[in-house]
Length: 141
Length: 404
Image (cartoon, rainbow over all chains, first blue to last red; front, side, top):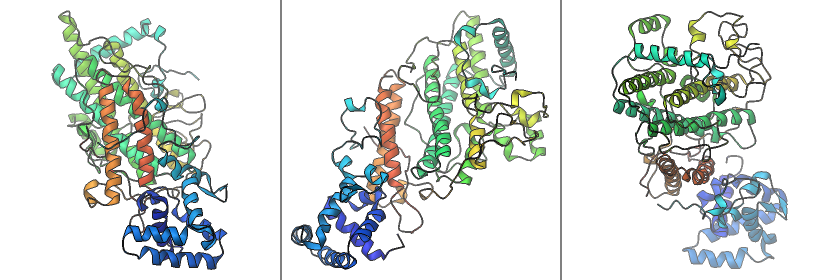
């Protein structure tokens, strides 16, 4: 995580947590953080990206979850703001896609959509023969 | 080439003998020899209870190799080191098979296998006083890790750690503890044969047929065929299979002179499905497969080393998790603690599942497969989480936790 300014990568990770509803540690556990951060850098106008992270810094500094939620809704989600980056980040984490293109084989496998649906990516992360007959594993013991 | 699959020291004997041939005359004579040898060499008088205890330790010994092998395996980045992944995977599934087979044996002699009450606290010695010089850590895939695995599976066991002088002394006096996994199993086999002889003399047997056995209906496609035990023949076959797949009894490659005519040490190549674990790990360290012409003997032209087709080993394509992860080193209530605890719970649940399967509910084993996969994905997830030191990632703890 040293190639980029840690500050922006950090902002990306933290805002992603709010946007996706997954804890930062779960996002890190996908191993995709840097790839997705770089995907944005590669596809979006640098000025827009810089403004987006500035806005993220301000929003994350707000007091309380509700204030942050409202600010995200008003500032980052509308399609016209920051080239629609807010929504694209959500789609990227959930589907491993950027503009309907799969970012990488790992991105497909690590999509949050599978965890959210308590299933697995077809063709990868097999859960074992006959597992479809059982309820998804819960280890809340 | 004269393929002598059934010779005593042949590491290929995991290739199971077809049942129809099992009771041929030569095999019977061979069995008699074993019986005599065992009666003479069983060092101390062991009771059936002692045997059960030793078998429990054997099962714990098999279990103890699994977390180190899995940790190295899962640390390899996806899509890299394909040959190494296949080799380590083939070894680890055989260790799992061994564990369940020992449970079958414990059940067959009237005991109760207990899985999930014990797991080593890594870095750890091996259970059963086996190779007391060796400490086994949980560490990423590396040359050092593979060296450690070779030591665990070394045909000469603990003797490898000693000087020639010390070795002679031990061989003359009879050592305390066990020099290797093979020797540990040999002691069990000898005691078992002796106990059965004594029981037979009284018109009894120590074996109970079809008691809580896990069969190939529940355990298939992983590491070879599972052996169920109803009598002494089965039990001997089972132990020979474990020793043959593991380190083998190729200790003779270190004590006998090299003889180019003796093809017992030429056991490699495309026709041989799998060879003893020790040699498979060696292939990784030398990033070459054994060639069909290679010999296992260290004084052979190839010095016992693989000279076959090379393959790529990328020691850097790993998740560099901090060795020997422990729950106790994490701050309670942190996100990382919770993730690690979840892994430990899955591990605990898996062992409990195997325990129940080996104690009368064999069908549960199929459900366990889901837990095994889940364990893998959780381990890989932890290994992707960077630690604050900027060097390491988090890793799986393999600890037992409260779990009902």
